[in-house]
Length: 103
Image 1 (spheres, one colour):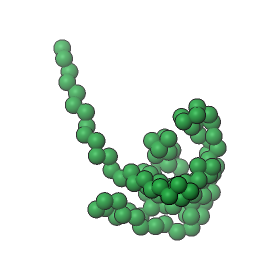
Image 2 (cartoon, rainbow, N blue to C red):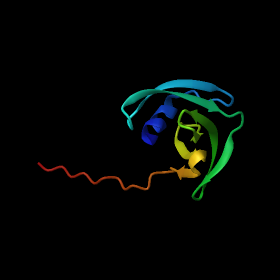
Image 3 (cartoon, rainbow, N blue to C red):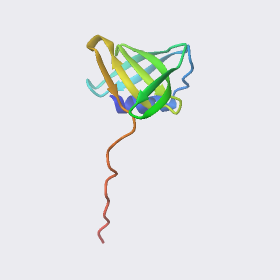
């Protein structure tokens, strides 16, 4: 679901102190779900690898997650406090696919 959330954040008007309610499709169970996103009053500086970013901190229900989203809408970090899990997404390290055109 992280990829879908990344796309979603790119279209949302994130502002400190704002609360958003979004209908989203959850591919894990093929159901429509309603997400409540509460953007905290203060931005936070986060470190991903060697880079430092200023991020909106979003509490997301019912996922019970904390999302760190930078101004351009990229989701860089997800925390699941109930599971004591942190996922740092950062920049993709995947290589671009090589495409060969055969006539």
